[in-house]
Amino acid sequence: MSNRIREEFIQKKEPVRLNKYLSEAGVCSRREADRLIETGKVSVDGKRAGMGMKIYPGQTVKVGNKTVSRQDEMIVLAVNKPRGIVCTEERRERDSIVRFLNYPVRVTYIGRLDKDSRGLLLMTNNGDIINKIMRAANYHEKEYKVTVDHEITEDFLKKMSRGVAILDTVTRPCKVEKLGKYTFKIILTQGLNRQIRRMCEALGYEVKDLLRVRVMNITLDGLKEGKYRKLTDRELNELDQLLEQSSSLPGGRESRQERKDGAGKK
Image (cartoon, rainbow, N blue to C red; front, side, top):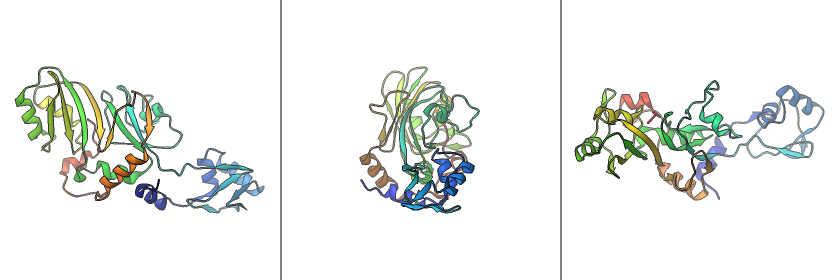
């Protein structure tokens, strides 16, 4: 199914030298790729490839009779992150989300969840989507289910929803709903660093469990902890509509602290 997000992603793909293309496709090193090209074992769109040529999106590359791909496909994944996994691309971190996921295409996260938080994490190789979803000025919703250490009061709910003073600013008004004696739902449209934990702490509560259940139109429903899935065409089309008027550029209505924290942890 055609999708504007996919089409824009393909259009923005830059051409890449053939030896780099083969390397990124996992065929061989660049040096070995040059040898394959020199010996005539590589073809592009049915014709013998030449040294130094560039590959554009949509072209067919073969080594012998085997078609190879650099995975130019746009990837958007919904991941159910377990507690203990760290949102970082730092290779030295043994418990990084990148190591944990071990996905064959390089993808990165859209909005962090801290090590002790769990739930829905979107990951993609489309930087434009990341910027549009995480830009605070676009007011996109993220929904969480939170368990705290003592009973939730009406006063607590009112203060959380009206805004709490943290990090030299006051959080945006947000939707808060009591789910149980110690559990509530909160919907945010900003991403200050460890925002929910800091808000609760400021009001005398400690977060015992934090689960993200939704990012915009994407939900955690049916996705087991530690597992991932690709977004469906329907989800991508809905996401496309929601992002249509969103800016991926810096600036806008967010506060100085929001710009500083950007895709802050919860």
